[in-house]
Image 1 (cartoon, rainbow, N blue to C red):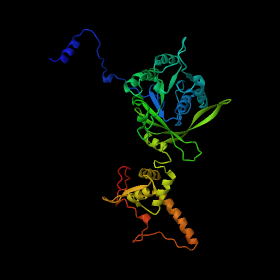
Image 2 (cartoon, one colour):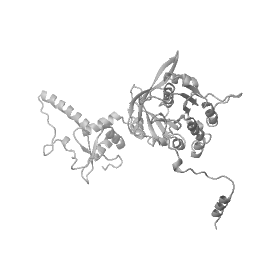
Image 3 (tube, helix red, strand yellow):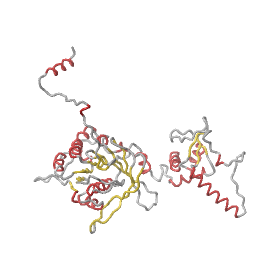
Length: 416
C-alpha cells in the first residue's frame, strides 16, 4: 500500500483534529446583488476606478460620494435611494482640497468623514495596508456607512503591488470591510504607461489581481482636442469589467471649477450624454491623437480620402499607392476610412477590395456637384459627369449586393 492511502487512513481513524467543512448546494441561500448605484457601484463589494493622470478620477469619485451623502441623482438620472455616510482616505490630496471638491459637488459635509490618522499619543498616520481592521471597527459606529474611497488603492498593498499573491493578501481586509458593513468600496488607481490599445482591465497599474478582485472596473479617459482648439477636452467614464451586470456603456463628462468659499475654488464633474459601446472601443476613440502616427493631421487625411473617392469607388490598391505618394501611413488611412464610414466591398471571389463613400458622404458630394453644375450652366458652360463606355457615371459603378458581398473587412484582413 502506498504512503498516500496510509496517510488517509490515519486521518480517518483520528479521534480529534481539524477537518474540512462541506456545505451542500441546496443549503446555500441565494442573495441578489445590492447596488448603491445600480449597474455601476455595488454595495458590499470592491470597485476599481482607473485612468490616465489628469482625467479627473478623484473628482469623479467625490462626485459620486456627494450623491450618496444627499441622496441625489446619479449620472444616468436615477436617484440614490441609500443616502448615508461616506469615508474618504487620500494619500495624494490634503483634506482641504478634497473638502473643496466635495462642496463644489454639493455634498452634505455632515455625512463626510475623512480618515485622518490613528488615535493615540504618537498620532500615527493611517496606513491602509496595516489599519483596515481599525477602520472597519470605527466605520461600524457610523449611522449608515455607504461608501469608502481609497485613493490610491495601491497603498493598501503592503508588499509588491506587481505580485498577484501579495495584492490578494493585502486587499482581503478591504474586501472584508465592504462585505461586513455592506459598504461599497471604490479604489482609485492609474493606468500603466505604454499600455494604450490594450484591454482596459490589463492597463490598471500593478498586478492583474487588482482588477480580478474587484467585481466591477470603471475606467476614465480624456479626449484629445484638435490642435489649436480652445475648447476644454471632453472626458469619458465607462465600465470595463463587471462580474455582476453589464460590462459596457458609460458617460461623457466635463470638469469645471466653482467658488465654494471666499478665495476658494473646488473642482466638480458636469455629466453629459450617455455613451454606448465597450470600454476598449470608447478608449480607442477617446485617446486617439488628432495628429496621426505619421505626423499628419486628421483633417488632412480625411480630406485626402474624400477627394480620392469624390468621383466614385476606387480599389484599395490604388488608394494605398496614392496614400504612399502623399506620405500617409496605411494605418492612418484605414482609421480615416472607419471615421468617415467608408464602404469597403469585395469585387467578386478573386477580386480585390473596393472603397466608396458611404451614403451620407456621397449624397453630400452629389449635392455639391449639382450646385457646381448649376453655377456653370448659369455662366453658359455645359457640365457633364464623366461616363464609361455604357454611359454610366463612376458614382454608379460600385459592385451591387448581388454581385459582391457588402462586408467590411477588418483592417488586418483586407486584401489589396
